[in-house]
Image 1 (cartoon, one colour):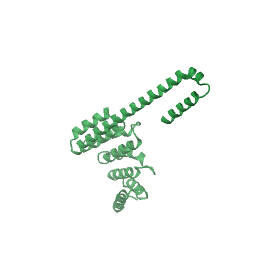
Image 2 (cartoon, one colour):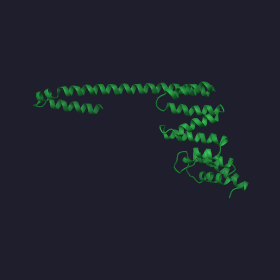
Image 3 (spheres, one colour):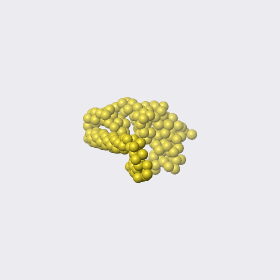
Image 4 (cartoon, rainbow, N blue to C red):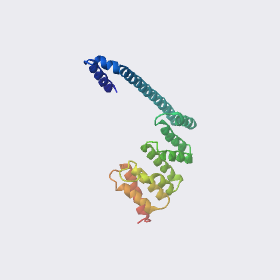
Length: 223
């Protein structure tokens, strides 16, 4: 903006210094003054909007930190109330972050159904950043290992298992555990083998996958 402004006024000054000074000023003077005024007003308006956005984001951040503190102190009901207010009134990414954290608080209270519902809503929110959507789906999948069916876990996690996906091996592990719990050891073996064969898998995840593969082999119930 500043560079364009300087160039604009430099061209005007050069024209004003020319032999046609009187003609140019008489013909374009009002336009130039009006343009300059619009630039000044536009710049001031942009700076005001920028300040307003930063101010609101800062307030939302402070409220979010305060809500996290309540959650860390096991003041779950107060934390949920604070997070709910941020969901409704916060700016930027804070509303979706508040909803994500609220799901964790619900899970810690034993409300797995409510937590999964909130996480599923985030996962299906096309306006939320993809990384947050994937994280919500993965969190829901892990909660459903204990409380849901393999199909429910799969609905959340299977879309993230393709090679190259950032959360691929965590999603595969969730699916492997869900299949193992359901008694489908052949399917569980497939998921754990994908982790073991993936050179990019984190060591702790790969180690757990190998332990599960050893258990499945020892059971003799999977080819």
